[in-house]
Amino acid sequence: MGKKYLKGFANLGIIPVTVNTAGSYTATGEKKVLLGARSCAPTDNRSEFTIPGDDGVYDSGAEWSDTTLVVTVNEMDLALLAALGGVDMADVADELEESTFDVPPEYALTFSALRADGGYRLYRYYVAKCSGYKITHNTRSDNNDAQTYELTFKCSPRNADGKIRGTKDVDKGAALTWLDTIPAFPTA
Image 1 (cartoon, helix red, strand yellow):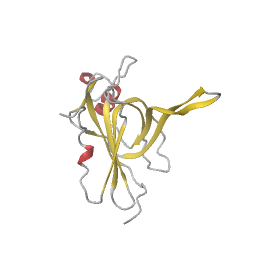
Image 2 (image 1 turned 180 degrees about the vertical axis):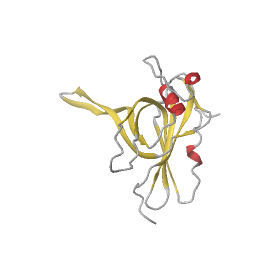
Image 3 (image 1 turned 180 degrees about the horizontal axis):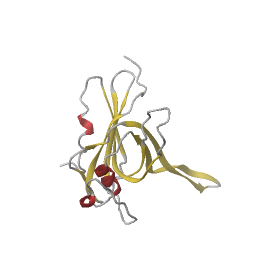
Image 4 (image 1 turned 90 degrees about the vertical axis):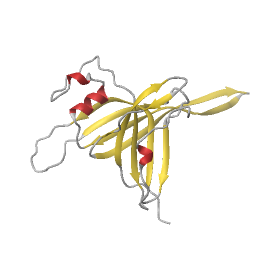
């Protein structure tokens, strides 16, 4: 059995969240693939707490509030950038007009990380909103590097059960279909 450290990042995609209420959660629709996935840096945001009692510490710990994902991709289609930012899709053809009134929708975000043994670790974030993006434009000069897009996602707990992330390991050669659909909650 080989080592299972992670050494890759691929298969980045989003699926629209159609219902996210206190009673149910559904993510349906066509999965959109973000091409040229280069990197993903998750930061779990936790708030520490201490409860005093009996002249000491009665309890302490940390509560997970959300996760910030910073994802870098090589290219970004204008229609996909509009979808992530909540821009009216009717206005997008070969031109994108962004405004202060755009409201980013919720997506389920999925991706894979290649393991050293050839298998994959698969990830699902159930409620992700793109809170912004940036790109740095450089002259071509002496290199042909891509001018990458850095997308920032805030991944919140889904309202029905508080789940933020799902993770699954699959062996080498196994299908990665777990990334293509998100199970509804509660299950039927």
